[in-house]
Length: 415
Image (cartoon, rainbow, N blue to C red; front, side, top):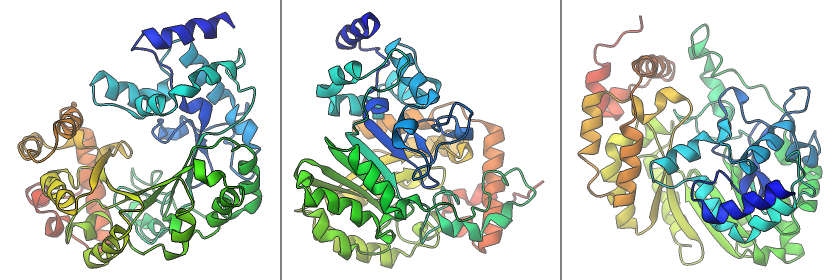
């Protein structure tokens, strides 16, 4: 395959290569059972979902994993990368790289650099894989959750069903539909058995949700790697919401090569009650203290979902993580787009950029790239309406919890 050999050479000599290892090596699942090339692929309107030739979304535990991995959409992504073309669904990574702040693609290519040759050798001319052998899997274990974060929705949190009526007959209705109970693929041992067959050389498992500690069935999957001792070569990665302590999984986790725990804490004190509704800071902090007792065994980090709601408090958040002595990571909201920080009012943008001095240079650069993008007034007005409707349903007031927004909501009325 001359085309592959030429691109293989180009990968090593051209920093602008479009290649990414993830469409070859990775399984990125989502709570309702759909699959994308990776977790940061563009999912608006299902653009990156693996689909059959007839345009039907493939679903975990219903459709065979080789068919999902070799769907027409996934084959197209791989073939475009081989040809040096940026797939549309991968635009987020290329945007970050052009702004020199790193990307998921960059990290994956470094993590799996030794497998790049194998990727090319394992590719058919149409972009399909000759053999399926996952090296990195992400299991988003359904939407069972005990929180309903403002940045979330019913696809990732079952609790959100309580609030969807707030958007009936509005522009938000299709974004926040009532999610009826779907096939619980994440409880299906047959699915885990099938997946295990395609994980003979697995290196990393990333588990999140929903809230993954509420799904005890995934322990069955972990035990398979413990029983054959391949766990000693696998890194385990969790995202937890800090509302409970995962006692039942601790002993299993200790069997794996490394364990990284991302704690989803998006704000501090009373602010967290609003942003990650209906969190309580005392409960969150109590469980944080329990988990930090294992920091000599597990790699513990805080992963903050950054949106319009909490970016004004970043300096305080950075100070908090510094005092704890743990690493802080940022995940900027891309969807829904009206919660993205680029839509901040200009005066609030200035305030944010003047109050990030505690952040590292790299962290500051990331904030600047996000905040200084062209704002969209239509999306900003959409944000105001969304928050107002949600507050009315939840009988809560953003002005009470996030004071930087008081002047913007003080006289706002839905037109």
